[in-house]
Amino acid sequence: MRGKGERIIFLADCQSFYASVEKADHPQYKDRPVAVAGDPARRSGIILAACPIAKSYGVTSAERLGEALNKCPDLVVMRPRMQHYIDISLMITQIYQGYTDLVEIFSIDEQFLDVTGSLRMFGDPITIAQSIQRKVLQQTGVKVRIGISSNKVLSKIATDIWAKKNENGIFTLPKSEIETLLWPQSVNKMFGVGSRMTAHFARLGMHTIGDIARTPLPRLKERFRARFGKQSDIQAEVMWRTANGLDDSPVTPGTFNTAPKSVGHMITLPSDYTEIDQVNTILLELTEEVCRDCRRKGYMGSVISVSCMCSPYEDPTGFSRQMKMPDPTNNTNIVYEAAKTLFYRYWNTLPVRRIGLTLSNFVSDQEYQLTLFDDQIKTRALDKATDIIKDRYGSAAIIRASSLTPSGQAIERSHKIGGHYK
Ligand SMILES: [Mg+2]
Image (tube, rainbow, N blue to C red; front, side, top):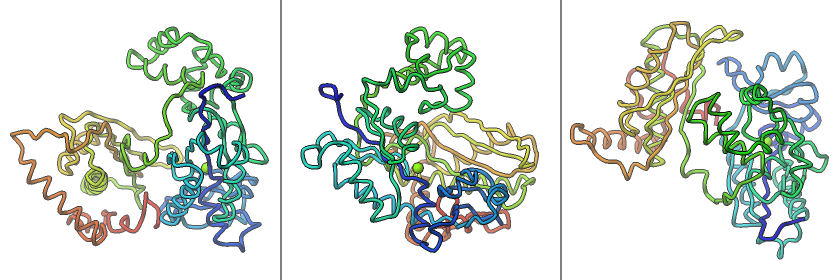
């Protein structure tokens, strides 16, 4: 089954990760429906994870807490503990590292493992997968599902389409069998294809993954260009390669903290904001958080995106727009000015519910060319000093004066990770 020179790659996914961790820590809820949700009082009452029992009542992640409670009045709702989940995730990564050095963190609850070199020591792939499942379950109470194939994209697909639905949580998708197993699947099951892309493919008359795979690449590029313009060549190629199970990329340890594609933060406001001063305060806080993360990681971004959702919740309006800045930067004042320009260009003055800000298209800040016309060195030194104090004493230590007005959220947020309580 295994072709010559083929690797053996796992994608290991933790089932209902946050909810599983909470159930392991609260054995009294073992047989109860449990969900982890944000703080309802602050309107972030969104289900982040639901255990399988809760899911059997129809509770799904990303729905509102109120809807979930309608479906399942007995639902045990727990507040997220993000730092704890990060700790458990690192613990699981360490378990994987007991089997191979090549472990790549893909998200908080998904890791790639290259076990090609581990067979001699630990046995065949299924034996290794079962051993990993046992160990993680024993130590953390989390059930792991494992897709097995010869590259990352196929092992991810093996997990998403099959291993998550299997009783034993393991599925092998050999490259040689993608034509019979993968190609008959509908397009929306393919990794990287959302509902929008599914609709595009439907309009191109493509309904199965095989429809994409069997279209010659130059033809697919042509059809994408007709729909999306010249920029779409790369996207067409990614789709085509995924459908054909082509992926040479190595499993790269330690990619979690290096080379992020973007850094972003988002905030759901405690009440609707309509005043420019209030909105500016939030934009500044978001800018500060994003720029601080970028400085800590050593990146400067040249594309800024601002997203905004306006009331009412049931029928939200809003926008998500991006713009290129003249030079890559992680300077708070420069990014703040750009954020305001972008926001006020598109804001329709409806009450604001949620604002997000993202910086992307990074270069390393080591390579950055100083321009002669700007007092860059001084402002960069000031940003750096602020960061050091915040790192040492917590991010509430230095708060810009505007954050002390009632619309400021920075003090509240310093107790949270990704908008959730630590
Ligand atoms: Mg998962």
